[in-house]
Length: 255
Length: 266
Image (tube, rainbow over all chains, first blue to last red; front, side, top):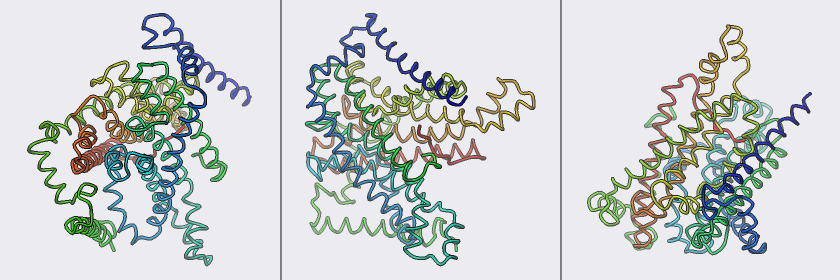
């Protein structure tokens, strides 16, 4: 019975996905709008693969992912570190929290001009902006996870003689993990949004650059292909991270 | 001992630290340790804010105009997203078949980076206001939709069964049980969507405009006015913060029984 319901759900999702693509194809082929402005998906895909060699395509994807890896790695790393430290030591929170709260509302993209002033037009400025995009959600959720731990849990551990670093690493941090995991996924999504925007402004490779260049050529097919490619890359990497987290943090907790 | 009041020791320590940082920054600038272009002194930023208020930048556009235009663009896009996502989300969340059908589209739609649509929006609608408002609406739409769907879908079944026991009809259940129960999630979506709006606006104001805070921040670069960029960042941060605070107040006012629910992912 359950498997039948599941199979039905999967079928419905499949129908939904195919339906959207088919509808798009049909409308685009009907000739209501010029195919130069609104190409059918098959034409956009075939045309793009013909115009952009596979090696170049892989280069764009890897360039974007490489930038995210650096920015996200640094941002999430520092976010986890500071989130845990400020969540654990009250004096550190009193000191650091106001500074972070003052900077946090500034949208990451608004940092782009200053990033260029500080780090030049090359890779470091992009990595810096992605770093900011990843840092704040990860920091916030790590901090929230640490301050939201059930005090009973900590007191119980203390009663059993646990204290200092062992209390932090064996009880507090594991208890904060679910919140941390949420922050990591939000941070990843934001890193993705930021890298594309940064590449639209100033880059010589990457998926954002690819679609911005296609716009200069007026090639809507490649733009649409690029948008779908960016969406698919985001979806695949996000699911992979979600899966990895589920395996580590535990299946009982929905992330 | 009170730890979180407006003048608690913790709070004073934090404010003192911020003040100390600003003083150090100012002193380091005066002593010539910090390059004025890379790190304009706080006092310089103060006079820049004055300049933006009185004379305006670029081409005499005053800061008030930039703020007004940016907020208007965000408000239009946000309103459009709310108007579309709330009714759609309610229907999709209420009908399991529709939810299943829409799942791939919703999942993919929210995976698409909003600003990757910028080149397409320009190709379709030009560099005018429409493209900007639509992009903000797109970004806000998917987080809102996901949250409204989840709000309706994950209503405690006990509530619905209880309403049935009290002989409430399907329409009555929808309006009097499902809708209020979905509100906390919907508000979580509204909060996240507001953040998305403030994030996307900076990106969309990169092209085809010299009005708006995003345009101000980015345009200042071509004039080598890092001080103007920094003031613009502070102003957009301030308004982003104020908007989020206002929404939170509204939420506490409307939903006194349930606040602070996290946004969902799916």
